[in-house]
Amino acid sequence: MPPQTDLYNPGMSRQSASDLTNQFLIAMPDMADPNFGGAVVFIAEHSAKGALGLVINRPMEIDLGTLFERIDLKLEIVPLAGSPVFYGGPVQMDRGFVLHQPVGDWNSTVTVGDDIGLTSSKDVLEAVANGGGPQRLLVTLGYAGWGPGQLEEEVSRNAWLTVPASTQVIFDTPVDERFLAAFRLLGIDPAFLATSAGHA
Image (tube, rainbow, N blue to C red; front, side, top):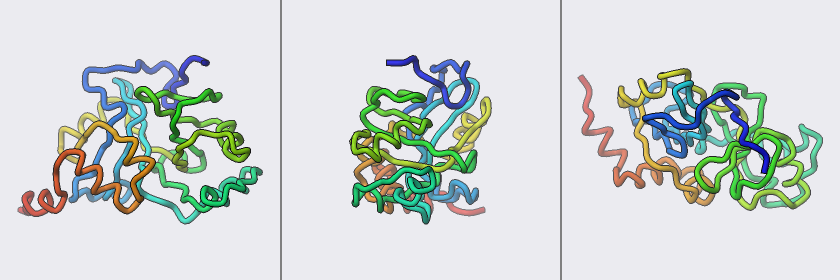
């Protein structure tokens, strides 16, 4: 297997004292940022140099079949062709990212945890079009990025809750249930948070 490629920063160290890699960020109910209100973000990389994540619960109006046509590939697997492409975040929205399981062996992949891959090279989509791609996948346009210390500061301000990521939430849970499912991993009802926080 080729060495791991870092999508965010080629020289990035993979661990830090407060490493949120392979965790969900769950937007607090009062999050005002339109990019992230109601979002569940899967953090694929996090170190002292910054963080990279993908929003996993915000489908776009484009489906996989249409996306594949735009990159000159034909996706003939009917159920998959109708699956949505997701808004991964506000950075590089002209670039595709594939979150998948198993990791496989692709040109530009970051391995997250034991069995999740994040690939930014076209070869994984070519394999999907040919019926030989990963068994489970989620495709986004764009990603969410944070500079050094930025994510830690947002978490310290309680903009996000964090919880270890669940592949079931990423790949198996209906899109409109992922936000609540992520909260359930913490044993929290978001309605309780919204009412208990109060307003000054």
